[in-house]
Image (cartoon, rainbow, N blue to C red; front, side, top):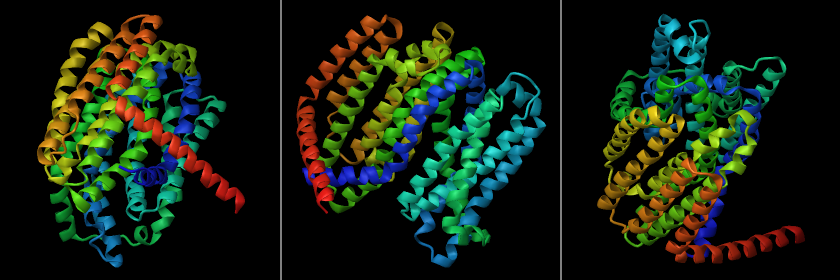
Length: 486
């Protein structure tokens, strides 16, 4: 993979992730601010709301957006409005039915989310579901039309409005879980205001095609289980904590998860880009481009594992960003870093599954990890509380990576270097264990040793990265000089 190729890759990566980087910066300010405004208990209630929303949303969505994407380019311009409204009709109907059930179960829903039978949780959930359906289709349209700048503008406006609404509500005296929920609703609404006008002609001509509707349901139905399995996997930890511990414990865990999840904002641009980029490489020359897949996996594995080890070792410094009542959450974070690390590694290596159209393997990987995570949480939460949930969640992600990596290499035998990857993952797990249960000195020492070992294991990748950084620096400086001289 020559430097020019990498240069184009980097250029495309930043084009896809401009809004994500701004959102990362805003989140980096927002998380410390929120943890100084909202108590761990109220933060835990907000997390429970988001968890319930996160489970109900894919259920109501019924994966119809995937059918919309699948058929979009095959439709003429005058047919796309009908496709849009036919696709979105089922989710809107399911949201309406779900909202009725939420109202009927109002007291139980309020008790589960807020800890008492009085509240507005069903109403807020219903509004959130409706807005989320429209926003997903809004953003999907922008992506299908390849409007990266417009898409980034929507992401930035959502992040900025979320933060500003929290500040305004706080000054008005509202410092409860409802502050965070209202900020979320307001930010989604702002995204709609900015994004909907882009294709207003589609939205202003609601049409329904019953034959198209049947095709959409047939295409979407098999994908629902996969979506629900993944959502259940990522929310199992918080659901179990809600059942077996207090709102405060959920709040500590969620604050730690929130800070760790900032790394997923960085990787989001890569994920948006690597999928279609890998598909293009496969169709251009599946055999000769295998070397690019191998090298990309090595770069991602080395980069993510080393960044995670550094983050884990510096956790006590990083968590100084949070409010003082949340700083004990630093001990929860080490194993949570396995989640973004292994998911990104799995995403990189699993393209062969999609190339072979054997996507049922994603269901196998997610469901296997879900079962392991459920039993892991049942065993570890009573012993270690939030730390136990983090351990179970982090280790279950190894199952996702292992299954998807094996299946992908079976259908598209690239020859990935799994030995180095698993050895480095073992080192990361060891560093996470030490930093979870031992003092700061032991944690930092294990981190330095682990980092040195991983660099040694990937010494060829490390050397190549150093060369490319120097070349990239030279290229950027030359571009800067050209801009100044113009």
